[in-house]
Length: 214
Image 1 (cartoon, rainbow, N blue to C red):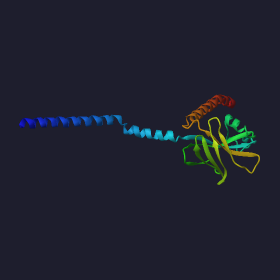
Image 2: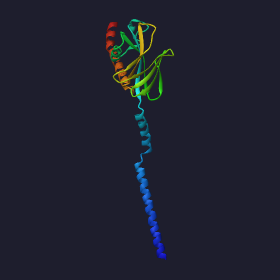
Image 3: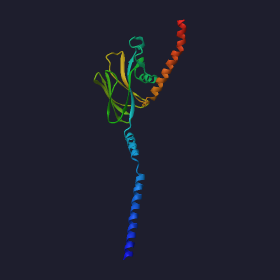
Image 4: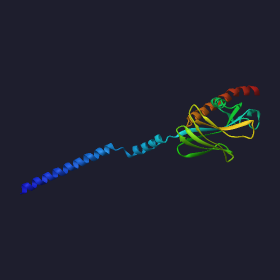
């Protein structure tokens, strides 16, 4: 009787041990297969970003005129002329001799939010992403909506939203283009390059000015 009891105890112990080992291996297998919590958290925003990507845009308030502001004392040097590529694009459907950038803003669009961008004291843009590369724009002048339209913005084809002016001798619009420098690195490098050129120019002129004093 005692031997039978010992055998039963041994079999029960082997069964329990086997069950524990099996459960432990399954648990370890699931644990290894499961992604770490940090990886899951990092992956989730990326998945959301792929579903609803950000659309980086650059907005420029541009003034078109036949007047060279360098000929007007109080405006001299106040605004910079737009880049040649922008002037060429505007020249496809406009007639002005000069185009000056009054202000420049950046905005990262994400559906379905509408973003408000103040371009100047009297000009405001409300813009939202409708679908891939398509935006809806509302242009306000002096707190009144002047234009509402949808436009497709691509890297090769920016779009201008024109405002109205009482004078026929000038024109203003907001040019919307894809921002190819969302981090600002290119702009910073350009500013640094211009600053170095200016320093070199001043350095080269310094000996000349010293000779003139003599």
